[in-house]
Image 1 (cartoon, helix red, strand yellow):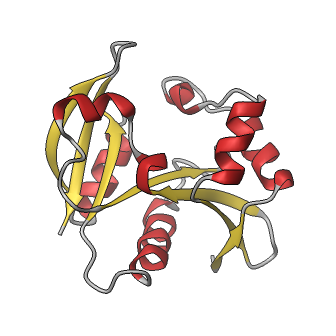
Image 2: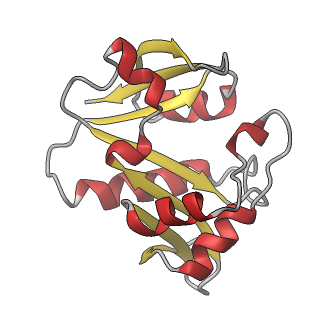
Length: 157
C-alpha cells in the first residue's frame, strides 16, 4: 500500500468524524460537531490517502496529539514531537499498522532530522502498544484522565 499525506479538507474531516470503532476502541469515536471539525481543519492534522485517493487515516502533531490530563503530571515537559494517529476502522487489526505508522514517522521526520517522538495511548489498547513497542517506543509515564481512563506516554529516541 503506497501512502501519501494530503492537506485536511472539510470532506476528509467529515469522513474521519463519522468513523465508528467497535468496543473497546470506541473511545476513539469522535462527535461530529463544529468544535471537532474546527480542530481537524485548523490544527496540525493531515489526511493519509492510498495511491487511489482513498482516505486511509490521519495524523497530527504537537498539542493536538497530547491528552490534556498528561499535562498535570508533566508527561509532555521534555522536548519531543508528539504524534497522534487514527486509521480508518475498516483497516484496523488487519496488519496495516506498521506501514501506516512508519509512514507517519517518516513524514514527521522530514521536519526534524533527529527527532524524538512521543505518543499517548490508552492503556487498554494492547494492540497499539505492541506495535509501538515493536517500533522502538518505550513507556515513560502513566496517567489517568478525569473520565478514569488510564493512558501511557511512550517515547522513541
